[in-house]
Image (cartoon, rainbow, N blue to C red; front, side, top):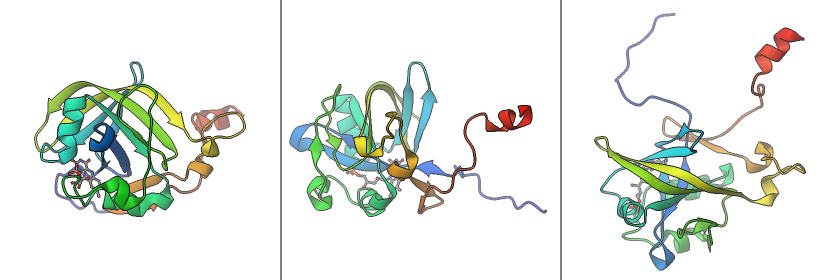
Length: 188
Ligand SMILES: Cc1cc2nc3c(=O)[nH]c(=O)nc-3n(C[C@H](O)[C@H](O)[C@H](O)COP(=O)(O)O)c2cc1C
């Protein structure tokens, strides 16, 4: 099949679209981010790419902490809204009917309505170009008990993750296999 050369952009898909809470108390804010990725297992590091012009950029830089709140597919509208209005103009908590809940290890509040929360402390900040990369060390993870199975393991059918692909919000689809299943099938 013939290949078509496309513009050299960050064409990667799917990527997560997450709600990052930042700042503290009444000054806390929510920003939608898609430039988010796992960087290292030990220490557990996640990178977020944030444009310096974002209101949230200053809050993350000043507090040195942020929380990645994983939304479920049913929260697509909130995810989009928090990515098209600024905390400079709008209280996104009130506008979206979201509630602050205390985190375990950081001063930044969690978004109570999201099923999973990853609390991070900024280890390093790297200016890259349009975006600054905040490298956050994960210091705590909390999950809503409604998305765990009876062994306490995250049940993705309950969490209903949301993915972002080429500007579209989509549900994550059917199970195709589990880690290492290809080799196990060979051995059987
Ligand atoms: C799906 C989606 C993904 C986004 N990803 C990023 C991102 O990774 N980095 C970024 O700086 N802005 C991103 N944005 C834009 C910000 O969320 C948006 O500018 C927001 O209004 C900034 O809020 P703030 O001014 O309250 O910080 C994204 C927006 C959407 C809708």
